[in-house]
Picture (cartoon, rainbow, N blue to C red):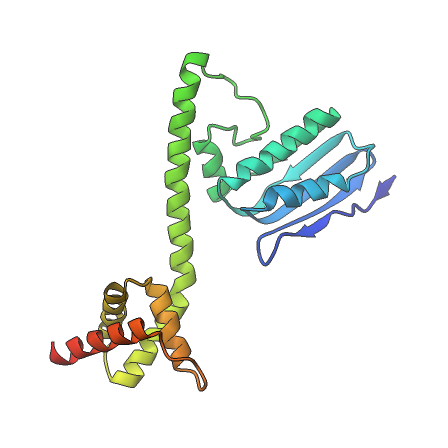
Length: 225
């Protein structure tokens, strides 16, 4: 007997969706999106909806394209579910950046729920754990910086275009004006760009006084440079 599984939960815009189906005593789940903050809660709700007769849960992780350290909590929830219900749980088909996180965490990239083939000796385990945590922290910082840079680029490009049209400067000059305004006002570059873009709209608010002062100084330096 085959029945359609009910799990189909979203964790927000383009974050994580888990779809699935139940076939007899087996559940097949397909997460898609990102394993970030909140992903473990989405998974827990999905697992709670599975029938009590389930004895095996298989997850195809091929649709997960991004993972940070919150993904390790996702795996903890799966492991707890399997132990508490004496259920076989597998997670396979890891690719790309999520697979890299598993490697850094010292987990099996074929199925991170499998126990390590060679567990470290107790005396060395704490050193390994500290080194792994440090490497994960560095990687997470790099991932976050990249994410912010990608998100900021459109508004920065818009602000450069506005400065070029308003003040007759080149693209490079507009970039230097934005960067100098950021430095003078101690404001993040994307916030400066957002304020410039908003002020150019028909009923848009002017930049805050400290930004306006810094922007005027940056513009004056360009004219006198």
